[in-house]
Image 1 (cartoon, one colour):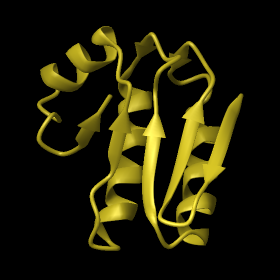
Image 2: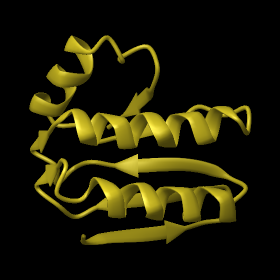
Image 3: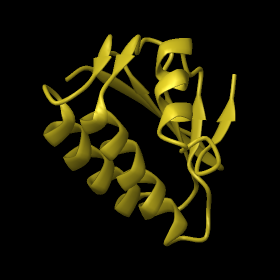
Length: 102
């Protein structure tokens, strides 16, 4: 799984450098999310600019990350969500769960 992390004073951006967020990488992605989100104490953002496809395993990863942020009384922010991924989020009625930014 390819990704970049940009840690700043007030936020941390996890940029997934994969075309597909699916079952192929979901176990590794969840492990990285848990490790990273337990380590940081600032706003967490997942940048999905490179992700063109997502499946239910990918949504499960995003929901795990959202729960970890909610436990810290914060909202997970998803950045640069592509149309196909956003369509799946809307179909699953998860558009109210996350915050979005471009």
